[in-house]
Image: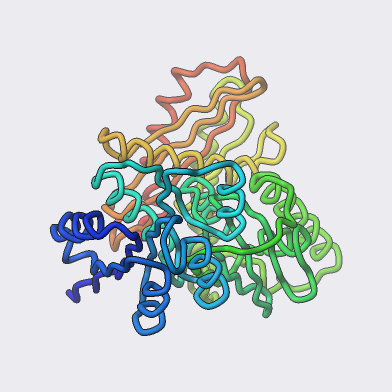
Length: 395
């Protein structure tokens, strides 16, 4: 296995003692970090011109070239490099300027070295880039929101390539062909089969999206459903942006895969009928962990598809939080609202939280009940049914 190359972090401050302390303190992370130092912005610019730097940590008040000038220079010449600002005199005006320049995080002086280390590693994780396959776009976007990630998401859909811009987990702008802002975002989030790439770094964009991510996703799904219904009325073939039964994300369906998926879905739908015996049953569905629907059984629940996608993400966020709390990966979430109970249950027989393994099953079961239903029976029935469903989607 090839070891991951250490990331290069440039620390800029006019206090030499502080720079030596940081360099010595990060020596224990030498396998993960390569620390460079500069005592002013001018020297930092020289380093940026000759070295590949993954993150800059800078003070604001420095001689020759201060932190403001350094950040402005980076905005013009290396906007992909994230920045952490250390300051002892932050004001509302200063923070507003820094946020406009796409600064990743702030640290108020004085602070402890462990605080700096955590902030550095969090910023490096948040700015990571990569090409993603087999993940459902709405689920990925909700993960970005939950992680408060600042990044650009490159989306290839229906022969076009668009960009979604996120600042601290909030969608702020989008581009797709001649479309900009919310119209571009809605066109992309409604694409059920997309090639996705995350581009880390700072995001310097005007805010042209006012809706929340959840509002965008629900509206995108609604438009996708309307388009699909119109297509069926016309008798057209499925569009390139819609996954036909048996298609794999990013791939092309084959006759054998279609047949297998149809058989699995039919069998799973029969298994889901066991849940209709629960008093107040309103709907149920089975999803992959990346949000791709595998089988649905609609009852009285309206917008079951939208509920399923969002409930699937609630479970993923809960699992992430339970792992961070040291209690292990969560298995079930119960959402009680004014008009419904929503249960989301994970069955993962593998070790990767997002992927199945050969011979293993990994599915999420969503059950929607009316708000006056029997909760105890529902939990028991969900546990029983998901074990049977595993046989339909074992890989």
